[in-house]
Image (cartoon, rainbow, N blue to C red; front, side, top):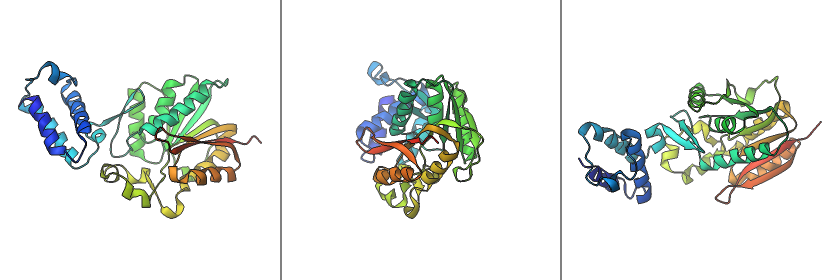
Length: 285
């Protein structure tokens, strides 16, 4: 079958479930991943024809897209800054907003005069935050923890594939014991309230791990409370804490850290204009 005909089938089967531009993107990603073909193949070779063996993975991907499965899980990879990361059902798909959180840390560290900075990533998932920081900050030792063995295994694989050193640990933020001090703690913990599920697309709620996304409506800041208590013990005086937060609970989250005696607490908006990030400084003793 001709490649153009398969592209037409993608559009026929997936529209209006997905916008036309997104379908074009899916198709380009699939032919690059499965066949090694560039997005301009149809422009340069309008009559490009595939064998049955070459067609098969494209139609398999199409079937999975029709069930709302994220393209990143279908291809087994996601892009984060300049990284290519493996992803699976154990981890969230990295978001563009989290790239902004990483950039905030990098900008601050590059203006600092301290060498040998120790950074801890709490709830590392795919390892996207820790790996990006380790890759771009040559003066940093990066540590990362997660409670899920499957996520840690994938994060370790991603670090190896991106040729960076990250010290991964299996640990529970609610029961942490540390004998090490960090200069920076960064985290993108679960923060979406159960009531907010109705606002989310099915490809998120049906496929991405709920334990990495959702928190109870009556205790939405439980992870931030645990992180604050952890930071009181293992963040050095004047150390910085960087967090991705729920845009609807920005004031409440900031107040929580003020109550735990953090200072210079600054909220920051994401590219969509929502208060998505919080930076806090530990009071020097």
